[in-house]
Image 1 (cartoon, one colour):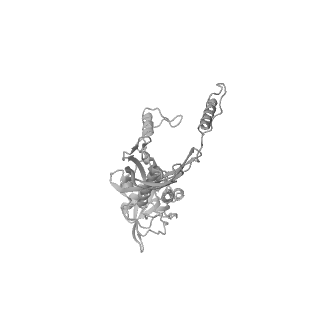
Image 2 (cartoon, one colour):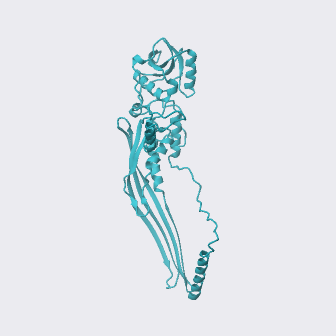
Image 3 (cartoon, one colour):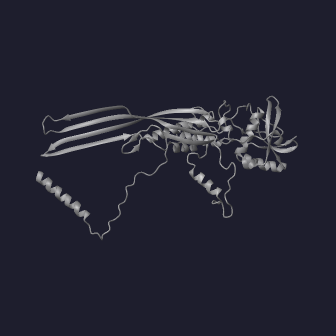
Length: 417
């Protein structure tokens, strides 16, 4: 047995060596690389809910808040000798993707290197936007952030619990067969803390601390036996571990889903049951949530149907980024033609609505001024109409209203005075 084994080994080694010693002038065929499964879109348990929320946010008649992402850093310090950091270093990028799915407007603050370089080149006259036009630096070129998200990965517990079972059996003879089977599980724990912050006042509006446990398992099977003077040792096994970085992405997706949902005063289980949300804005809002400054009010100059109540301000994180409304002396005068855009319960909300309308429809409202007109509605009480103008003619007002209504913004020509 031993001599035959030695001879077989020598022959195999000679075959291997001869394969390596090929003619140097002969070029070997290229080796095709191993190809795995096709690439797929990254999804988590909250991806569908984020997309559902995004459809709702984009369908509103008023612009979504602008949100930036700061650093969501790995603060655990967990490293592996061979593989480096145990927890992802790209949590901020995951948050940007989740915000995009949620339908809000995202402004870049995480990596400003290219933007800063472009501004530096423009300042020295080295950047052009066309063959004849140099890029100019003007105040207000960059969009401001209403809110921002920041935080960190705060816990990584590599093994909070392990369990195992092993079974071994063998023949009582010294040369008999033996078999073994084992099953083991272990649990990893990772946690993060993130917060939603007002970009102008630095007030922390909301905080989320989330934890995810990650389960791994291992199965081993072995057989050992002496056969005709030889030894047979057969072993098989399987190991599986839930991806740690996917667990982090899932927690980020959930935090973003809850942050954006709270801005729109949506219930915690909204979009989680697979059903889409209605397009219209919530009927009633609570303080601290995003109000609808451009509620579509179906009315005309002769007949007006006002909402039941519209006296709730937008959240401070959203209000702060909009420009200050014009003073009364800069407003539209009477005896002019204007465009009725919305109605409110108090003048302060009407002024705030004007600044938000300007932000959402800059091209359509450029050069127009606001006029807030108190109007008593029979059986409904006092309302404040927001009218934009002056418009040159009734035909011009109708054309501009048509452009606004094409974007789901209510607009009706009206004569003031």
